Length: 303
Image 1 (cartoon, rainbow, N blue to C red):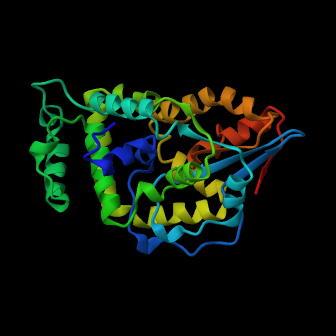
Image 2 (tube, rainbow, N blue to C red):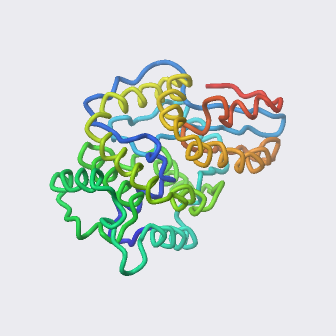
């Protein structure tokens, strides 16, 4: 979605804008020690194959590695790895570039023309911290600016999408020669943001900027819950943070979960073991993929 000259933002957007729902992330000092409980990992066992469902955190500090043995075993035991989007091919890179262009205004329009005074003032106040001028952001729509601010904030606090579970296992799959695939196109990830009105886009950027200084404890709790397989805490921390915006929540979670279900069902009962890695918020909760599969009669075991 971004030119190769800006890998940080490109990788940030590459993670499905998953952190868009996380409202911002804090410093590494809030991370809890690795717990000894379950993992954010589920298994569907059939007579012919095993399908693993792994919840990802898209951006992580290097300190979370090495991962729990269960996560490594799920990868080792699988012949194919499927992510939210297919990573690393030319079609994928072209789709990223096209989606980035969707985040730009037509020539002659500027960001500052579409923002409220409150949001514009907040943005101007924070820009010196990131070493960016407003002029560099003027071509971008608010959701793209929000992503950039989050990317830079994460980078300054020791987080990196290259340490996210998606990229970790994608690089490992490349090294091992395991085939990979995706559940959706990049455009499906950005569609909810492209549909924002000016008022919604302004509110989205303002909420992201306002959350930046206050989310260290929150993100530490989320990583602790993820490491411990605490599904109730993950649901509360990730999903419930967006449920006040019902339409946005539905398009980010429910609609995409439903769209993925046919492809996920097709992997169950196949001839090869498959590892499916998606954002943790998609697996947990009332409308999560795990609960949907269980309601359809599949035996889904948390590991």
